[in-house]
Image (cartoon, rainbow, N blue to C red; front, side, top):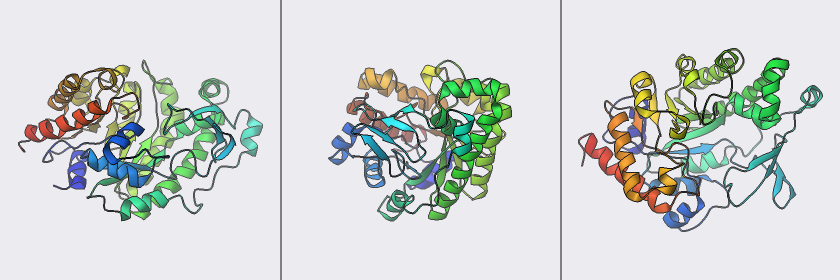
Length: 355
């Protein structure tokens, strides 16, 4: 199997020739070790080179790139993205900077708000690079943002929490703004030739879901379902990235056409065995290697043991992709990253009877 065939087989919850490998490549020192330099910004050429150096089977390329599209700097370390959200850059944040101010604080702000135009030229430039370069049949996964995350970045989580009770229509109007943009983003990505879409929408923290299930069902889920349905009907599989504890929402998400759930965060109580037993016949499983404890603080032997454990639990019958339970971030020693995927490749091949 080539890389794309292997990853697609796992998404169908079938057994490939070996367990596929994947991750979010969010660590500059890893790039330096593997491809000889540190990217200034997340980009297709370097992400693909890094993915191939780790023998990955897929790579993630977001619509329009990181740091917003054509950000406006107001200080050396502070900028506004095109949505109007203010970010501060730190040496620890690459490639995801921290928001420090939000453009929609009141109903009047919302009334005046003008969202960015998804049709602006240049948004697909990195996607086009990734598709046109020699990518050794990597599965190219375009990235779009879900409604909950967009709302959080436009109005802030505290304001969202109050609005759920005081003015839920305030939130649903922002959800609609998000979907109008990301429905068009999905259309453009598929038209450009991506092989699948990653929907990024974090629904939980390390202990519980962000909102009550009743609120999720009434206010959030209809917009998630709309986006998944639309993108699936474009002819590509749709994968969910959602950090945190999301158990309360899985039965609802299972009613959509989502094919995979990532990253099953260990420190948020997303138990791999429980998920395999309860949802392994519905979703491809991606992730669960601990990026908060084992990968940053464990030895290579600890990492190898956790990789083998995850494969033993989730790989039987197919439908498992080895990845961290968030990303390969700067806190992880590069040797642990290399060991994770070395063991995943070798043990994941032997597990399916391939040497």
